Amino acid sequence: MMGFAYALLSGFGRRAVFAGAITFALITALWVAIRQGRQAAEANYAIRRADARIRALQTAKDTRYDVETASPAERERRLARWMRD
Image 1 (tube, rainbow, N blue to C red):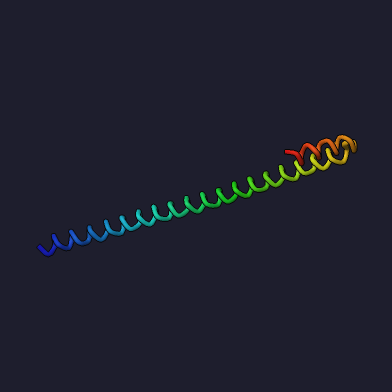
Image 2 (tube, rainbow, N blue to C red; image 1 turned 90 degrees about the vertical axis):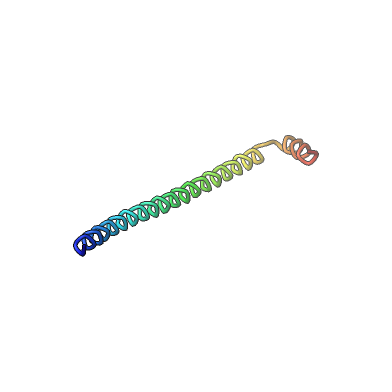
């Protein structure tokens, strides 16, 4: 009877260690996936922010060029229309 109980408990110990190792591996894999996903999202956000800034700078440059190259009469006409709208 003692031999049976010892065999059962020693087998339980090995199973517990195996289950603990698998649980640890799953938790580690989940942590790595979440961490990499967060870093990818932050990188994507930084890229979108930089693209928006570049578009804003390009629009400002185009607008400034249009204002500087327009004739005074054209500038007055556009300004009057802009103020009216």
